[in-house]
Length: 248
Ligand code: GLN
Image 1 (cartoon, rainbow, N blue to C red):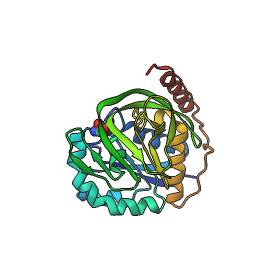
Image 2: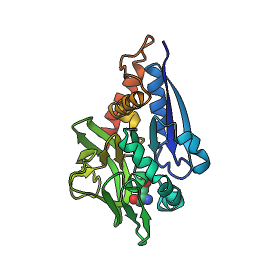
Image 3: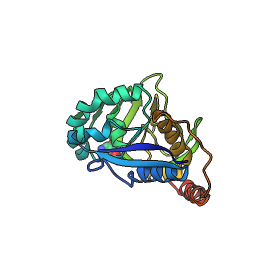
Image 4: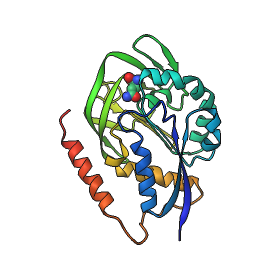
């Protein structure tokens, strides 16, 4: 029996897609198919794509340079109320680095520019004098060890009570100071981890998929139908091992 179709939306791929972040969408689609779900992957870059966005069962967004963030800021602010409403209503979202920053209250750039955020996360980002770059590993109660790569000037501070995505085991994370990395609110995950994140962290991918299936009115069935493809897990495990073994 074919399980429900899932509508996956990639947010601003034309401007916000650094360090392979589009790989997150590719892995979500591949794992959904392995579990027997049909998927429809579409993009939202500006208002004419609104018909795609309103059908989202899962929203993914990548990182971007300050210039890319400047180019999307006006449209993102326009979409802010709707995205906040969907987040509060349980739509799962994963946003990386530059979009993670703009899902907070604002990003103050290295040249003093103020890029407004949409306040899904009660967090603020201010560019530091250098960049936080390198391989990074986290520990997370929900997902165990998380591996990835970070490259950002922004130093993010979470307001009291805002849950991080994980705690830094090696690397810098939100600000290189308080040991937090990323943020979580409802079913929304924000993180600095590029790489892309999901191929090396299948537990996060499957958690997002489960929320998307529930959003589409289904019940998450983690057993794969016939034709089990264990190679996918073997490749993910191998990628994790290699990434975790890499020096900073
Ligand atoms: N431009 C932002 C910064 O430098 C985000 C960078 C990114 O998305 N990798 O912090």
